[in-house]
Length: 299
Ligand code: KIV
Image (cartoon, rainbow, N blue to C red):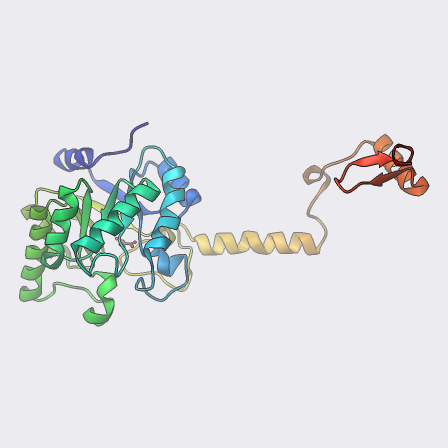
């Protein structure tokens, strides 16, 4: 089965079909997403926060992304897999970007890579695209720049910053990006950007006018009960559901109702008797290669 291509993603946009992307970080999340009909999976550096327990995406390494992208690719057959380029893997110049992007693609089988930034990284994007690496861009709130943005704030609220973001998105399209993520910007601005670009825009916290939407797996499933960004929607209270199930498991073991006969394996009565006899009479011993042998065989 062939994976969704960048050309098919463009065709979806042209047909006016919404593009749906979800993050995935392991085989299970990828299987669930693909089974639900999600055609675009992002192995995002958000894994630093939702899987690895960091408080930002900054510490995520290229090895982390490789480690998590492999099972996502292995467990799926149709989805287009986007691998995030983490902080430090492309900001140091296009040569480093090329080395890291080719490693990501070779070692994981991902179908494209994603980089944060606009005009600033356009040259790097062009080099990657020229080398045959499909690139998804990402502008607006770019979490890898959280320290210079002064926090996780809505971007592009002033006319000047909005115009800059329009230029950033346009620069990515001109450099050859096949799509661009718009993160945490006013809906009206994402509307302006989407109508000025030929490539699809994928929004997160950017309102309804984008060509598609992307969300974090753990957010839509409500897996963290203490954190829910405004731009997301909990389609299930996963944290309560899973916690309840784990409590039931603990209680069942403590109250000795788990495992039941149905959840256990049994041995034939005559084998039980034979084992007891063998042990009592010491007629058999275990040799160094873990074979049971009769005593007469070794004497
Ligand atoms: O890492 C990530 O999950 C992302 C999305 C929020 C777009 O970059």
